[in-house]
Length: 262
Image 1 (cartoon, rainbow, N blue to C red):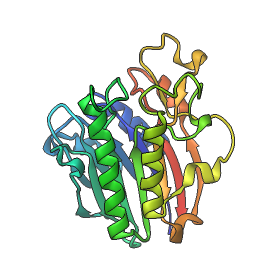
Image 2: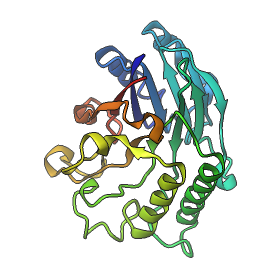
Image 3: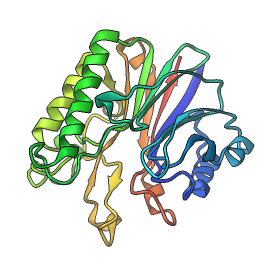
Image 4: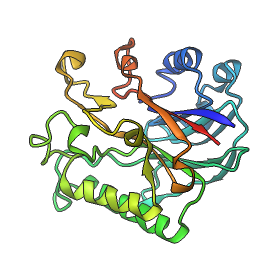
């Protein structure tokens, strides 16, 4: 069984329903994981998605904030959702595909503007969230699993437009990178995107604040596709669909793709 998976922070699934449909029509991933849906589950516009072949969904939602959904052409069974750091936020959903692969879809807290938990509660929440993710993966030790989502951290120097300038900017600070590395190590996760594209600058997010995001290219790789070691060799074909960031009224994120032969 070969399937293609995409992860995309959509920044409101209802506002950008047409963009989701466009991606479904033009790229047709078998599994589409969305973050920051900003919608209760019952108000996610499923009718249009079903008409395009996405007849299965597992999701967690809330009004106006957060929210994660896995839309799938393949049958998918919900197998849980975690509330790390006890924030009461819809930030994780997991589903199991017919081939036994579990897909985890995460939206890690962004962390606010100041990388100091003493003056910025949101930064502390982000670090606590990652710590509890780490501890959960150490205890559960996932197998035959894929983890995707907006993890809100660009870990490598070539995952940001300027490493030195961003060392004190939330999403690329050493403490965040260390927390993410511990989380990745705890589950034995393999970074599929960088397995396929090991060298060179690679971004999936460009700020709305940039008047010409494409020319300035001040991006960060905040969106990730990981897999457990038992299936990581089956992953290939990774790509960031950068052009989507230039669609009309876009999300500030571009979708990230990978294909798995399992």
